Amino acid sequence: ESELAGEAGIVRMADQGLEMASMIPALRELGSASPEEYNIVVQKPRQILCQFIDRILMDVDVVALELVKKTESQPSSLMLLDFILHIMKSSPLIFINLTGTHQQNETEFGCIEFTKWIIARLLRIAASPNCLILHENICNVICSLLSLFKVKNCAMFDLLTRELLHLLQDLILLQERNVTGHLQGDLLSWPVV
Image 1 (cartoon, one colour):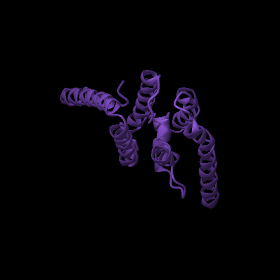
Image 2: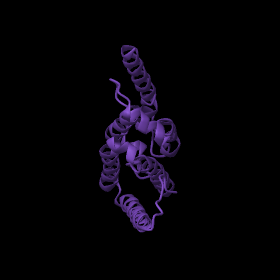
Image 3: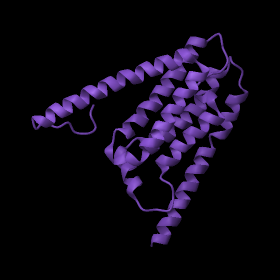
Image 4: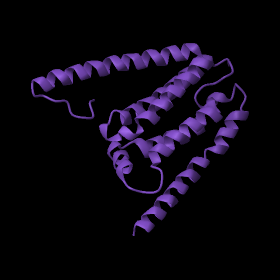
């Protein structure tokens, strides 16, 4: 029975690998797109990545359950984080346009919104105490995203960093409220909205 579960995990991992490989043609097309085509061509690989993130990371409880299962295969959430890191290194254009265009403001807005969307999903998982195993990997992805922007576009890096600092302020206030509530016997429950 455990052998079948192991085989099922390997098949599931292979299936997810094949699904992730479906992104390769879209990334190739993005790599060969002209600066004028960027805003249109970047939509397909972004859409594919968003679908993976939505499917694999949407339900925090499912992610946490998968992390505690004893299988030989790597959890899909961990595989997805590794995949995002790989894409940042091999195809940074999905996150940031490296060439200036006449549509620069629209392009930057799209890059920032896409990146903020990804970071929000990752932080939601990182906020769960049951997903502690992923914290380091999530930090690596977020730091790599910030490093990419720091090197390629300082203005966008500044904007993302400010957003994260504001979020950190909010988290500190929530923690203070939780500590105060704990002293009064009124605890916040996760997830905090």
